[in-house]
Length: 237
Image 1: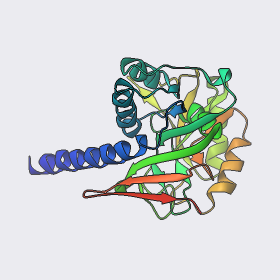
Image 2: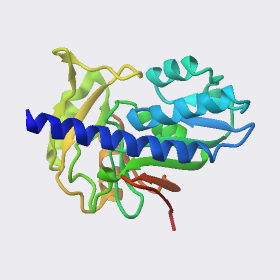
Image 3: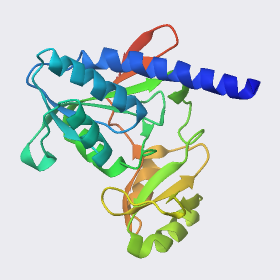
């Protein structure tokens, strides 16, 4: 019972920190902006914050990174457009599973890594929201690395990832393989602490049947960190 109380307390504190970072980040959005809308628990707070600003008169359009985000954005009254309809996104607000001191990240815990990366790469400014638990010295320390693969050849991809040193397991949902919004599978890969994330990203993306991997290298511009008692903003040098 005591352990459960501490777990609930920790989760509540992390949610409070995420909310603080999201509230700070949405203030960076300007009237008329096209905004990339991330996926996940932290991005959810930002989307809800944007909804409040829209009800207060802010005029923006959003590009969602997942079906779940699309649904939430519509509930919040955010007008949506598709990535194919625009040349550039002004600002993207998203979360991360891990981020290191170089602003390199692991993303994809919510399964939207491919669309998240495409939206981020189409953006002039990329703002990443985290609570302090997501800060790591080396990527791979606390989270598995998601890799999106073609269902037709997922076992081929699994074998190749294992040759790179990963323990790669198929992500499941209700005893069935989880399908991404793109109709693909996800392999969750344990590499341990990753020494050279850029090199590993290149190796993974060169494998047959791999669509995208959850290493986001050199993408984040601004990091907004929610702590228990404050919000800290860091810019990538």
